[in-house]
Amino acid sequence: MYATILFVVVLVLLISIRQINQYERGVRFTLGKYTGMMQPGWRLVIPIIQTMRKVDIRTKAVEVPYQDAITRDNVSCKINAVIYYRVADAAKSVIEVENIWNAVSQLAQTTMRNVVGELSLDELLSERDQASGRIKELVATHTQSWGIEVLGVELKDIALPEEMKRTIAKQAEAEREKRAVIINSEGEVAAAENLRHAAEILASSSGALHLRTLNTINDVSSDQSNTIVFAMPLEVLRAFERFNPKS
Picture 1 (cartoon, rainbow, N blue to C red):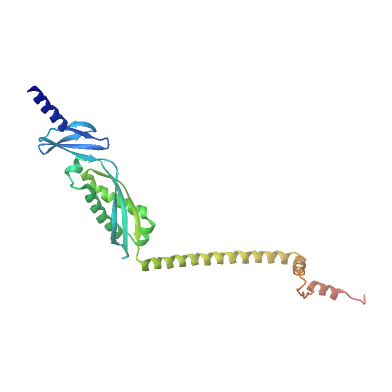
Picture 2 (picture 1 turned 180 degrees about the vertical axis):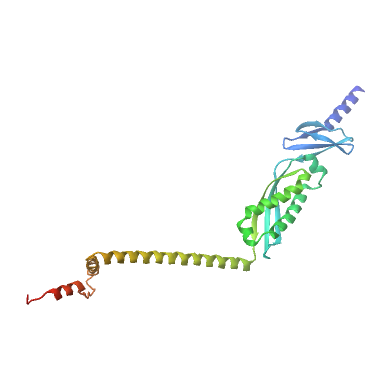
């Protein structure tokens, strides 16, 4: 008799024991009513009277599939993202929402489309971090009541139509050509300024032009195939004019 009672007691205890891992929390219900949280370790759950729901509190990543969106300047695109979240309040995550993963995913899809509609294409491409931050802010506001903490949102890809890609490529090429023309014109201005400065130095120094001419002739004469026509400097002719054999 006692052995039977002891066996029943041991059996009930074995059935009542629940193990909660370190990365989990237990949400306990008594007669269908929430009666508290259960921490990691071995815990007793009275059969029939009590039930316990385990909740994983580790950080999770939800990949949001590609969404068709239209930017503020009416450009169609497709975007996808990854949302990182964790359960901050296990009780709310069980009581307030049925399926956490599906709820977060659906909310993120709607939020992404709304945020893209607020931005132009240039803003979306150049300020991706700000767009991600805006999506995180909106998603976190809605999921707070579910006991969910949004840790981050990362836009993975922004897919554009082929014609838009070609347009952007042409725009980038035109911008590169514009910069090349500006740089080339600035170089020509600098070269002209240097030449003007050199001409002023040669004009202001007596005999400098002749030395430059002789230096040029020396460089050209190094090749025997060249024919040099030497123009006599004007100063030499003037020297002959001053020469008077009758004096």
